[in-house]
Amino acid sequence: MSSLISKACNAIQRKIYWKFYSFFIDKTFEPRMSYSQNGEDLIISGIFESLSRHRIFYLDIGGYHPYSGSNTALFYQTGSNGIVVEPNPELFIQFSQKRPRDISLNIGVSTYSGDQVFYLSPSGPLGSLIKDESVIRSDDERMESLTVPVLTVQDIITKYAAGRDIDFISMDIEGMELPVLESIDFSLIHPIVFCIETIHYSKTRKKEKRVEILNFMENMGYFIYADTYINTIFVRQDVWDDRA
Image 1 (tube, helix red, strand yellow):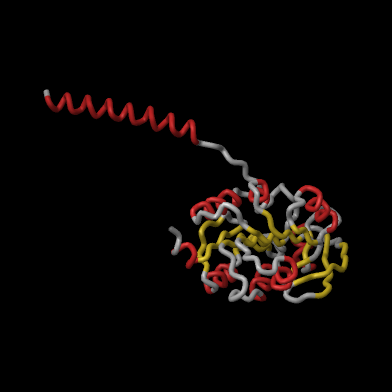
Image 2 (cartoon, rainbow, N blue to C red):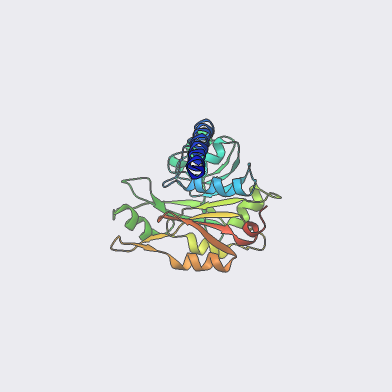
């Protein structure tokens, strides 16, 4: 008899628990919109929430569009701001119109500061400082070119964010990712999070993971927090280990 009573009590407790649990979830769950290609912004937002960072300063290298496919739009929408770099003049103008709190720069990012040729496909908005990369990505041999000013990451921060810490760098610069990463002085610039395009298109348009970027970031003190196939999200190991 006692075992039957015990089982009945347990069943009642479970029923009460699930009623309260379901009520709590229904009241507290808030669906969130993602602007990124594959939900990268929600993953990164979760990282900063774990670190109790509710406002961040970002550097978006290769902005493309203020919202569509953007890794920084979610943060802008929730009160953060930063620097957005977009060398394509037609794409750039949208940032100054739709994200006025950001510092929008119509330049390229390279391993040196000066001028460089930027290659554009006439059949789409994709472009690169590397001609072969533009041809492969757009699958179009026809290329338009224009000369654009370029700055290093260090020069951008010195000129436009002096005295500020960069919390997050998003980098999608069509094949220039590794050279630009290698040009960064990580003793001076050490963001908490990077989101980097780590898929490379071979000349046969086969997608290949750029393992050299993964190895480089590990050597710089970062670990892979998440990978969405196209992009890899890296977090500083020391900051993550010290979180409360």
